[in-house]
Image (cartoon, rainbow over all chains, first blue to last red; front, top):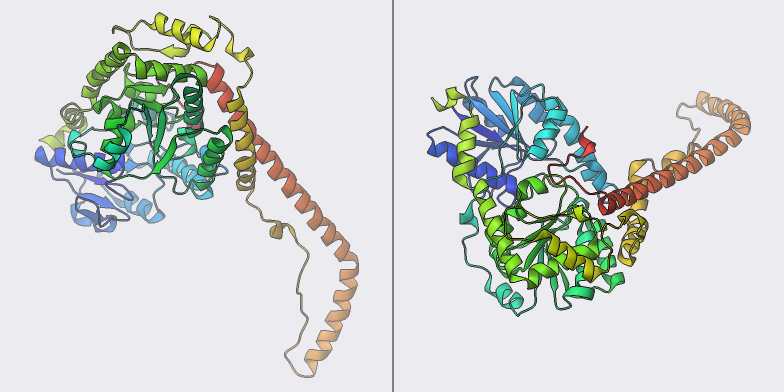
Length: 357
Length: 159
């Protein structure tokens, strides 16, 4: 009895790749055989990965195949899945609603539309479904799955317990409050709202604050140009579009941040919120999609985008040490829900008894 | 500014009312004000204006994936030639005469249809652009004046 995993493309850099790696390790530690399969194996990925068409020797009706789903599968993968006798479980990591990519990237617009259509088709092939969040599970229910289960992203601290980039630490720790956002530069992340809040923060609350926007804009160039134009026209100073960073650089940014600000309109889980909790960075976030669920009562949730008021709230977190300490303490408590032991046990509880026998 | 715009974790030492009071004092917003009555700030107006200029036109084009070239149905570069000796040139002459007669009444209709196709495409793309702009503004307005449920919110896109 084995539990294997599939995702079209598995990379170390994203949350899904991390989750796949941790799940495999947990399974192996529990004495359950587990291999990884993909359509486009990456030579840089840390765990051995095989092409999906090499799955035949591993296939069995007694085995479980976890189908990580975040993007449309290629046609050849569908033919392969239909022929498999294995018990298939969808692990849904969310697909951004297509309309966010209108005017920005036609390929993503089409891919997300196809992805959502395919998700509905996947219902016919799979026995059950899991989602990173209750928000994602609601999508699964809408698509026809009964009783999807929540399996949150497992937060492994080892990835972050590394030396921070000294250059960035030196650059950021000079007494200026640093406001941070980490995530792809994409329309659903609403970077324009972060900029609007920061605009008010600079003008009315903390003129010496700096904003660091970490995340790649690859494929989102029209949206990035819109953001840069906004910065220019509002004459906002001290905004840095950092782009993609190494893990050591990311650690440095978190260690130097005063506040984490999230204005996303759509998130399936939002790993950076958990990262902020780990690094003791108090969070101000707009209550949309899975954000409230991931925060679980921690952080400061705003239910309306009143940029001026949110700027004042950010300012209070910067200057009011009692408020700051209280928020950080509650975030640290919430962090426990994502540790390897807690979520790992959930994973084992979800597997069919025959696998564990 | 209504009291329900901020959700702070309960059970801690945080005095939510005091935070709200401080923010109201600093922003000059009266308590229980109706947010929907407040106009857009300068930054919000600029965001919507820039989005309309820079993103919405492309959104309109993407929504209607037809090129201007596809609108033109007027046959271009139609050549009548021949390959078979003796019969070929005779055949070609006859076809040229027939083609000339047919084209005399067909050309104006083809040109008119191509022109109409282009105008429809332009109108469709403008409507799609306007739709994208209105959708963006509606989402921003909703996020500004309607409080979200602090529990899980579900996107209607998936339904």
